[in-house]
Image: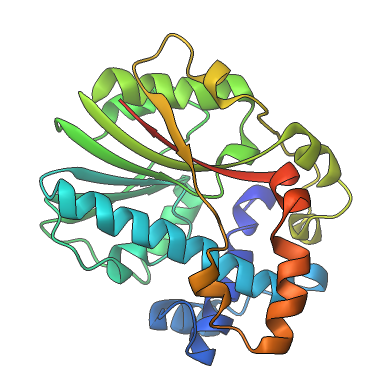
Length: 261
C-alpha cells in the first residue's frame, strides 16, 4: 500500500476513537476495523483534536448524504475515495444503489470488512484517470461524496473527475472538501498525513474556475464544524477545539463545497 493509501487510517482512527466516546459519530464498524487493522500511526495523527475534527467532517458528509437521499431516493450514491469508511452503513435512508470506490489495494482490504448485496457494491477506481468514471453504473441522478480526495489530485485532475461525472449523469449532487493553495503549501510541514509519508498535496482557490464550462456548478459552502456538533464536546475541549478548527484561519486552509448540475 502506497503512502497516499495509508492516509485512510488517520480518519479511521479518529472515527473509532470518537465513536467509543459516544459523541458526534456512532461508528461501531470503524471501532472494529481499527482494532483489527492495528495500523501504527503516530504524532499529530493521534491527536484527540484531529479525531474530533475527522469525526465531525464525516458526520457533516453523512448528514448531507441523508438529506440528498431523502429528496432523491432513486439516486445512485457514489463514494469515490471511500477508504475504509462505513458511511454506507451509517446512512440509513433508502437508496437504489450505493457504490464505494477506491484504488485496488484499498478495495482489496475493504472486502475483508464489507459485503456486497443487491444495493451495495465496491469498485476499484483510480480518480486520477477520469475515463474510469465511464465504468460506473448508469443512472439519471448521482449523489457523489468526494471526502478527503481532492488534495491528492491536481486541479486539472479534479476538473477531469467532475467533467467525467458531468458527462455521465444527467443530474449531479456533489459534496467535496478541498485545501486552498495556502493550505496545501502549509500542509507540507504541518499535516498529519506527513506522519505516513505524504508530503505533496494540492489546493484549489477558485472552485468556480474548476467547473467553468461544465454543467455542474458551485451551490454553497458548508461548515466542517457546525455548532451543534462542537457542543457535544466537554466545555474545556470545546474552547481549545474552537481555537484550532473554527474561524478565519481554518477557512483559509480548508473548504467544503457543494456542487450540483
